[in-house]
Structures are given as structure tokens and as C-alpha cells.
Length: 66
Image 1 (cartoon, rainbow, N blue to C red):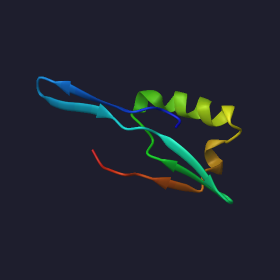
Image 2: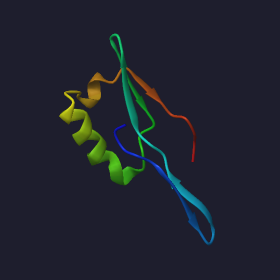
Image 3: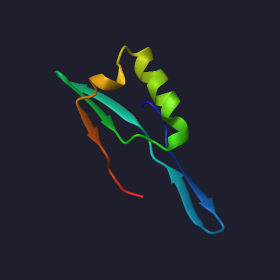
Image 4: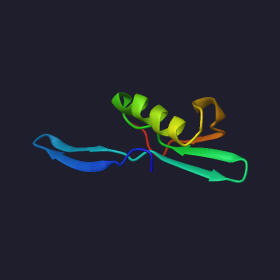
């Protein structure tokens, strides 16, 4: 888990952030979702901490659309 998502609630409806998850399977480096724009630096930092550069990601899975 790179960034933990969470559900939330506002008077105008639901508000939530999805988790960002990184998985390695053989030579494949997979990133599930990319999070909201303000977590991009956090995602890069966590990837660097585990020795992965963003350009090494072979598959990006976007699970939903906003």
C-alpha cells in the first residue's frame, strides 16, 4: 500500500480517496490507481523508498473514473 484511501462524508454527499497500491509480479511493476493530485509527491517518495522509479511502472490500473 503506497497511500491508504479512506471513505468520508459531507453534507453534500460522499467524499473519499482511493488507495494507491503497488504490486510486483515477475518483471511486471503494477500501480493501481494514482490517488488525488495532492498525493503525487507522496506516491513518488514511497516508490523511490522501495527502489522504483515512476518510469519503471509497466502497468497502470485505473479502477474508476471521476
